Structure formats: structure tokens, C-alpha cells
Image (cartoon, rainbow, N blue to C red; front, top):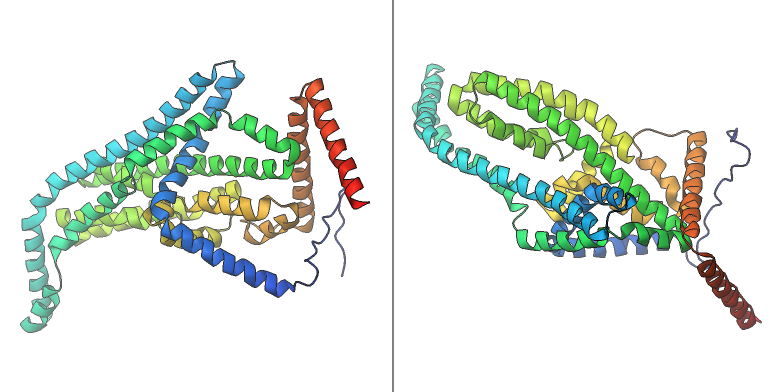
Length: 411
């Protein structure tokens, strides 16, 4: 079998060795058992871990603002206040918009009670014209409860608000994380000095998460504007509400547009009948399938290095583990797991080829490993440059002393 040529000077990673006396199959089984226990623990504490991870994502998203202020010489308290204000603005702005939308919808839904009854009567008449017996018609229509169907609209939006139900805890966690985020750069430089591979992994996680949030936010705004405009043109009530819902569900991979389609389609059914509902479904499908299911996954895959299959399985998995909040945070949570299990160890980064959006060639794998090595050395060099001559001498003396003590113990 031919071996692909690689650039000279590039070192191919050596194959990791299993501990002596431990069969590889046993190691895999132990890892799977540990994973099951960890997943069960996360699921049991999802009410706490979900808001904590949401706070982490919000802080990671706005952290560059604080870092830029620090580089320009601003005091640390200014960077903390800027980070905190940005996070709170996003959080309370979203909660406020959802609360107002739910209130508007609550005043609108009672107006459709008579239209729902009329729609049932029309369906009964149509079925009678098809020579379907009255008993059969009554049996079919008795299973249709339009009160529950209309109430589904409220349930969808209330479910989104339920994501932020533990608001006080979330606000408190954001406060403390924003304070710690001001010194996060210094902490990473300290880690990069002694463990550059770990610093590189967390740096890649932060940049990948920001890329995903930027891509999802941009495409979410595009989808929201187009959907709201199309619904307004068709005369559907509350087009801004459904545009906001499209924006939020855009963070749910693969099936987000289906969740965002249900409420306006039901409103269209009650407002203009089945024909209007069909038009809403067609317009939403054309817009959202084209943007969210064809164009956006390509950009998301390139930004975070995950295939479409992995993103869908991540949605199912994190939705089960963390509930509705897990569906919104499926991609960032998967990136964190990828960081802790794969990127943090150079000997396991080969697994990225199995979950990446596009199949890399052997040359691309070697180049990616080389770039990771270069970035790791850059982080370590930057950390070493921050040390003064006295601190560098003290560190070197400590390291040499530890080496001598180790040699004496081995002797």
C-alpha cells in the first residue's frame, strides 16, 4: 500500500501504547462504563448544569470585548462591567421580548375560539359530502380538541421562557463568571507555560464556540427577517413574534425550523383556513430548508469541525440530558466534550477526522497536526515571554532541582 508523501520535517505522531497487562477491549469497556455514570450524573443535575453552561456560553461570546479593553489599558473593573453589561443586555433583552410575545399571544388566542368551531363544522360538512357516515364523522371529530391545539402555541413560547426559569441563579452565575473572565487570559498563559497542549485545546474550544455563535446569529437574523416579512405579506398576525421564534430556534440544529413553523402554521389555519396554512408551510419550507438545512450546516460544519450527522445526534443526546436548554446548547456542549476528550491530548486528535464536516486527506491531517503543534509552541512562548528574568531563573532552578531530586530517588 502506497504511503502518502508528507512535507519534510513533519513528525507523524507515534502510536499510543496501552498500559502493560491491560487489554484494549477492557480499557474501552471501563471508559464506556465511566461515560454512562458521568452522563447519568449530568442528567440528574441538569437543572443546575444547564444554566451554568448557558452562562459559560454567554461569557465566552462576549469575552473578546473585555480582552480588547484590557489591551487598550482599561482597568480590570471596566472590563468586568463591560462584559457583564453585554451579557445582561442579551439575556434580559431576549427574556423581555419573549415575555411581551407571550402576553400578546394570550390576548389574541381567545379571538379564534369561534373560528375553531366554524373550522370543525366545515370539516364535518366536507366529510359528509364524501359519503362518510355521520357516526364516523363524529368519531373522528371527537378526537380533535382545538382548545388544546391552540393552547399548543402558548406551550411552545412558555417552554422557551422555561429555559430561563431559574433566572436568579443564572444571573448570579453570570456575575461571578464575568468577574473571573477578566483574568481568564492570565490564567491561560499560566496553563500554557507548563501544559501548552491543554491551553491550545481550550483556546480552540473558545474560538470554535464563538465561530458557531457568530454563524448561527447571522443566519438566524437573516431567517428571522425573511420569515417575518413573508408572514406580514400574507397577513398572518404577530409576524415579529414568529420572526423572533425563528431566530431562537435557529440555534437548534437540523430541526429548528420545524419547531419554529408549528405556531405560525396553526395561526394561519385559524386565520385563513387550510389554504393559508399550506402557503405558510410552503414558504417556510423553501426559506428555512434552503438556508438552515442546506447553506448554514456547511458553514457551521466548517466553523466547528462537526459533521451534519454528529450535530443531529448531539441535538438528540443533549436534548435528553439537559432538556430544552440542551437542544439550544447542543453544538457548544459537543465542542466542550470534544475538547476534554480529543483536543486536549495530541495522541487522540486523529479522531477529529471521524467527526469532521468533510473527510480530510492524510496530508491535511499531518498539516493540521503541524499547525496545532505550532500554535501550542506559540502559546508556550508567549507565556514564557511574560516572565521576568528573575521569575524565569527561579522557575528554571525549581525545575532543575526537581530533576536532581528525581535522579537521586531513582538511584
